[in-house]
Image 1: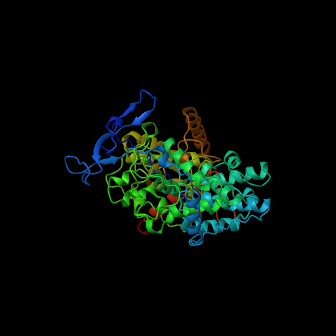
Image 2: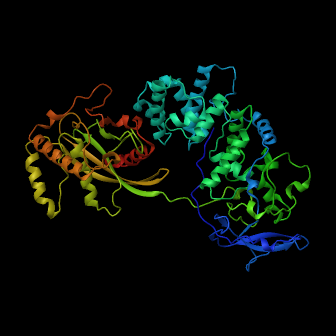
Image 3: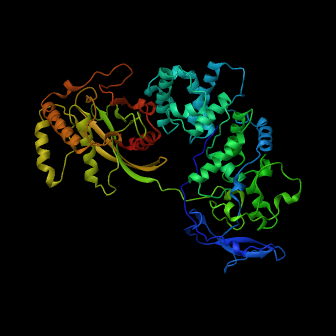
Length: 603
């Protein structure tokens, strides 16, 4: 089942209190608004949305009162909270299952199988494992992208025991290119817990699934347990959220708890007393993904069209009638009046105080309510693509990768040495100082920097020249060249990677020896306290003093089989041909492609 992220954070609109004193037997009320204010109801203590009333007789003309410019900004009508409740889901279930029978194999999803009540306990647990893997892969990812990844995963890890016996390097390698790498780490951690603590079987009910399995929320628990175990539990992903918002004509803040409670209640009603809860849930998601789409929904193909209040709003003859639609429950009427039921203004105590006003002629796509997305945080990272060659023109080109921490963003993946979240006003001189600092921590022998030309640093450079001249072929930074900027967007961060190509030469016949671990500055996106930085700086200075007089080749390491030189679990040298196949994320691969454009002219 394919998931979509929930709609964006909330934004407020305004209105006035509903005035029941203006009601009469011969009239109904219609609200118009440009602004909404919130007030406290003195009798109930609840906050209610209020609207400016415009009275209109049934015998009057079909036009709606308009603003000075001839248009209404927004319109709403008083309706009962019960209009957002599915009271009889049986006919909706029947129509939905009939539709699903004809489409469930259309997209060729290998994890989608008919429910088999004859399966024993172990077979159902295996089925739960298969659904679990597919659900986690489908988070924020399209079905067509997931299918090949799922097939490779199940070939490599056919059971949860196989997954639990693996390691993060192997898991991340299979996940490479799918994005949101923390999902892979959670799958591995959860599999180990299931095998070590739960007898090798995923829980057979949604409550335990959500409580005991890392990375499982209410949606995933409901999907897995309804499909694998036929438990009557609901699902509410982005597709079902949109679908039910339209069926219920719920036009409210999509992130508000009250809104989500109504939608979860609707999802619960759809599987209530069903003998095929898994099929119902899969049908709801399939319908939202393929028919009730964000844009251009295919309402004529929708099996729930007759119960869809959003569809009735759009197709009512009178634009006012579309504002007074009864509950989407029970069998649809064969009469044309199904789109224009009798006007009924609910009692004030039953009024919905949740929905925001609608456009004057709302379409299906007005639901769910659109709100502005929260702007992603912007960050600038300096990415240093560090290359080592024995000498200029050498055919063996080695590149340095650093492993990220096991927790957080891009956990456990490798990247080029990076200083994260730097100032956007960082000078060119300061940028060129970054690789020297990072390499002084990563390498046993710090490299000789590029020749510094500023008056302030000339004396320091002369001192370094003297120290490094003791070595016949000292390790040195031969050049630092800019490779430009690229942008990589995460769900909550907009990263700008400012790329530098840093070329090291000398130091022996093999790639420079690596320290046991990076311990200072912001390597791989980590951060250190001031006390840690002070300690790391002292350690780095001591290491440099001890290493400077020594012949550089005594510090080199023997490349192991496979063409990789490394003596650290956090950093490694890779031959040029191996870098694209390494355990790196999509953003790092983009950096690699960007910097490689320099080589045609620079190398």
